[in-house]
Each structure stands twice: as C-alpha cells, then as structure tokens.
Length: 221
Image (cartoon, rainbow, N blue to C red; front, side, top):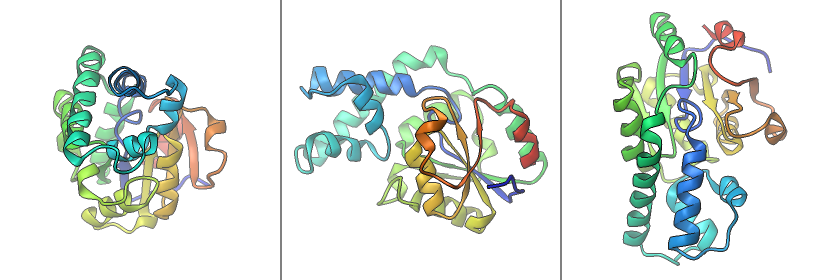
C-alpha cells in the first residue's frame, strides 16, 4: 500500500501516542495472577491486551465468570495501578507533538479511537494538554464491539464527517491494524510493542515507524 494524503488522522492511544504498553502489561499481569489467581504468563497477557478490559477478562476467565460490577471494579483498579506506575514517565512518543501541530496547521481533522476507558484517555490527554487537537474521541464506552471490529474507527470517521477511505489510522497493535482494515482504512503501524513480523497478516499497512520523527510522516501531510 502506498502513502496517500488523508483528510483525517485517527489515533489509537496507548502504545501509539504514548509508549506505555509495558506498564499496562505489568498492571494486568499483577491483577490477573496475584489478585484473581489466573495461571497466565506475562507474554500471554501481552497477546490478550486488545479490545475492552471486559473483553480481556472474558477471554481469560470466560463469559459470566465475573458480574458487571466486578468487571468495572477490576477495570478501574487495573487502571489506577497503571497510572500510578506510569505517571512519572508520561510523555508523547518522540516527534508526535510536532506532527500534531503540523497536521492541525494543514487542516487535517484528528480523532482518538481507543479501546481504553475515558478514565485512561483523560489521564493522557489532560496531563499532556493535547485534548484541543482532537475533534472527536471514541472510547470503549462508545461502541458495543471493540477492536478488531471496525466500529471504533468508523464511528470516529463519522463524527469527523470524513469517509473511511480518506482516513489514516495510527496503531501499535495487530488487532488495531485489523480493525482499521475492517473499516477500510490504511494504517501506520508503530513498533513500540510489536515487531513488523507480528503484522504480517495485514495488507493495509502504509509504513512501519518507531516514532513520529520518521521521514515517512512528512509524506502524510
């Protein structure tokens, strides 16, 4: 897939705008094994970290194992532990601040399309003071079907008033890239948590980047 100009950029959040996925991995592994008694390795937790928190819990323990109230309590506790550990490290991935400013200057609409709950989205956007760049925010609470279903990204495109074909998604997870493909969108894949080989199944990837200082980024503007 070749680089194309786009009318809108849709950003996943964790691992895509901030390099925090290892902190999520540690928080989930601690909750799942020490608090909830699951026999699951750190690497297997990494593979399960996509979609909503409820989806992850149901993949590990089965549907119906926890009540909705328990799921909500576990989810918030996991995010509290993640935020406490990550706050002192919180920063945008290199080059992203400049890229957001250039995109805004060029009139490109931007949205967040994340499987995170608002508690975590607000944690990043407000602590880094970047909320003003985004016209729309789609969180876990805004869709029934999370990634790899396309709903997160199609809803973001709809809110921006842009055709899916005119959007470029920024993602760090294979299931997120799959969601973009299912939405009919090209994708820039960040290798913050996964290697290029992990994305071999997807044909909608425009380019792989380690951060937003990559020269390919300038071709998008």
